[in-house]
Amino acid sequence: MEFMDNTIVRGSVVTDRLVKDGEKVFYKTYNRFPVVFERGKGVCLYDEAGREYLDFGAGISVCGLGYGNALLDKAMKEQIDKGLLHISNLFYNEPAIEAGGKLLEASGMEKVFFTNSGTEAIEGAIKIARKYHYNKGEERPEIIAMEGSFHGRSIGSLSVTGKEHYREPFEPLLPGVRFARFNDLDSVRELIGPGTGAIIMETIQGEGGIFPCTEEFLRGVRRLCDENGLLLILDEIQCGMGRSGHMFAYQEFGVLPDVLTVAKALGNGVPIGAFLARGEAASAMVPGDHGSTYGGNPFVCAAAGMVLDIFKEMELPKRAGEMGKVLWDGLERVRAAFPRLVRDHRGKGLIQGLEFAPEIKAGEVARKALLEQQLILISAEHNTIRFVPPLVIEAAHVRKMEEKLIAVLEELG
Ligand SMILES: *Cc1c(COP(=O)(O)O)cnc(C)c1O
Image (tube, rainbow, N blue to C red):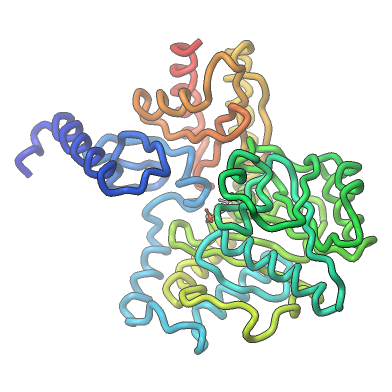
């Protein structure tokens, strides 16, 4: 309280101390920005000095509903008040059954398994592929993945991540993973052999720099899977949950995967993921094949169930499509103002990327935006800034972001 009369001074002193303490306690796997957030509301975060930041990162595509959603908060509080956060998967719980049913309805899949994260959902998907062919008595353990993809940090998901510098220090990884070029159907076809069991890809590559798959490519991969008896695993951990303008990005093209992975925005910040399957893939694993202590506990599922209700009620996928057009126009204006600095503009809905020319670094754009403009932007591969705001943003927020980004680029250019 003693600092309340001078919030800016309080901010810098407290921030400095917390940043130092943080560096002492955390295992050093991140280069964090020196900002300490304390609370959030709507599409804004507030640091411990009370400064407001406009958020176009949503906690890495997680907080689709933004911060402090009253309905979601109420659902979580009610579950807490029941004293039922966790019971294990030895028993049934209603929030998980409800959230599961809603997710199946939204995705067109037939069975769901709840995980605690995205990477665990990928592990489950890989296990389905293995078990599916094992059940048929066929040796088809190999997987085709895509260059530039990102599927997570655990050993299995790292094995199918198409970025060598993430994989190399941890080799040997899963054997039999080969990488095709994204959106190049011939490169996929060439890799299919008698040992191939599955193809895994993001419908829109996120970490890789915001590259949507083409309709032709997705339909072609689906056809190759059908012709060769392969499972199609679509990773919509980042691009799913309404962000593309459809609940799931594959729905735009009327294609269904055999296995789907979901996480990030499913819990709006509560850690939950899922893998879902249909057809024979939905019954490939049997009791004893897979499990999770926490996965799908009543607390996280009360949150996810409410998130899914709010998505439906507010028609958030449709809204993301509409706001996506506003964002597209805004970023096109930025591009037109800096034709030398902006190389490319990709994406759809509220998952878009601006790729910069080599003379400016996307990481530097993000740093300056945060520290000088109080605008949260996150970078991705390919010298790209990705724009993945809460799906509840409004046109005025896009305008404000545009002004701030222009101010950053004016200085850097
Ligand atoms: C973030 C992400 C993952 C990994 O999710 P975690 O929850 O960080 O384990 C996997 N796939 C994609 C496409 C992602 O964006």
